[in-house]
Each structure stands twice: as structure tokens, then as C-alpha cells.
Length: 261
Image (cartoon, rainbow, N blue to C red; front, side, top):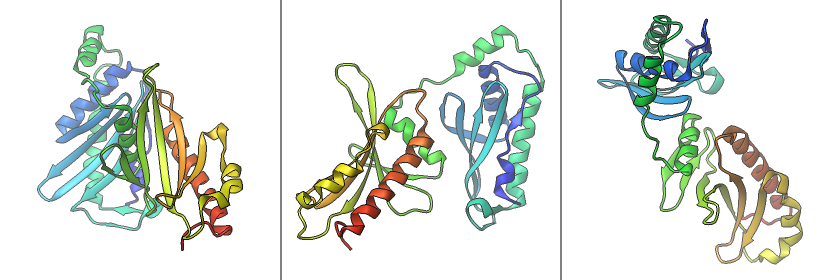
């Protein structure tokens, strides 16, 4: 069965407080033997493990809908990839049981008592992650493979071998955070950075916080997007922007012989 059929959004017949929807999802995950791996507002990542079989999912939710998203699995048959990915019907059945349990929990009461809502809010775990960890968790839920380095996270996009580094910088004056998306390419031998000044200036796009710089010491080009971190940050849009602009920069630099072959 197609993997995409698991991820259709489920609209709730009645609006619920978001805390009550979260509580219903948490109870359902536990009932169906899923263990919560990480959580942030409106998003839960969980894993089902029985013997050599495992399923990793995410559940996104609001007060009016929820969506179960397949992330990964082991021990279940599959074929194809991307939009053509087909999964074992047994896996679909397990996720279907979870969705039915969530529906049962939500229909027990269309208007939860205030005490229940307060209890659900009290159970919410304290999120001690830094801003970089929050961004990387979202990226991993989108299929990125990430590893922790000394001062950054190295992440590889799904279906693409070109890594991008994710790091965060704290402004000592304001306490605000800036997220850096960095990608690197090797500079051509015996061609100093000074030869590419005009091209590098052309590649700067301040409205998208993107720049390309060249370093003679490491003989590399750095493609950087600097984004102010906040609850309204559209991670997917910034990632797409960075990948698109680094591809354009790489194409231009390759056309003038700046990239090492």
C-alpha cells in the first residue's frame, strides 16, 4: 500500500483545546505501544518496537486536526522511494490502529473539562533543547540524516549527498539566536579567491540572508544562510531557499572555473 495514504490529515468534528488533543494522542501512543522520542508544540515523534520490527512516525496536531506521518521502519517489506514508496500492509494496519485509538480518545468528550485540560498541560514535558536542536529535530522529521559535531550538526538532505551544517549563534546583548545553514565546496587549485570577487558579490542576496565567501586557507567556498530563530520561523521554506541558492551559486562558480573538479 502507498506510504502517502497514511499521512492524510484527520479533521476533528469538534474543535478541542490543543492541550486536550495532545493528551489524547499521548494516551493513544501508549495504548498502542508507541514510545515518545521527542516533542515540541504541535509535534510528537514516536517509535513502535516489537522484536526486529520497528516503525517511526510523527504526529502533527492542532485543536482542529491531526496528521500521522510515516518516517521510517525496519522489518517491514517496502519498495520504491519518495512519492512511489509502497509499504507492507501490516505496517499500515498498525498505524491504522493508532489512528482509530486517537479518534476514540477524542470522541470520549467533545468538550473536555477545564480540570482535564489543566492536567494535560501539567504533563507537558519541559523542552530543554537549544534552538539548533529544535531545528535539527524538525529536519530529521523531514527525512534529513543528521550527526552531532563539536559545535554544529551535519545534515544530509534525503536523496542528496551534499551535506549542510546547522549551527546556532547567541547574541550576547539581546539573547536572541541566529541559525546558520552552511554548505561548502572545494575551490579550484591555484586560483586564489581574489579572482572571484565580482562573482561572490553577485551571489549575495541580503533579502534572503544568503552569501557566498571564499577562503584561501582551506581552499573552500562557503554558502551561508543566516536566519533569526523564533517560533514563527518557517524551517521548510528556509531549507528550500538555502538549497536552491547554493545550487545556483555552485552553477555560477563552476561556469567560471572556480570549483575543483
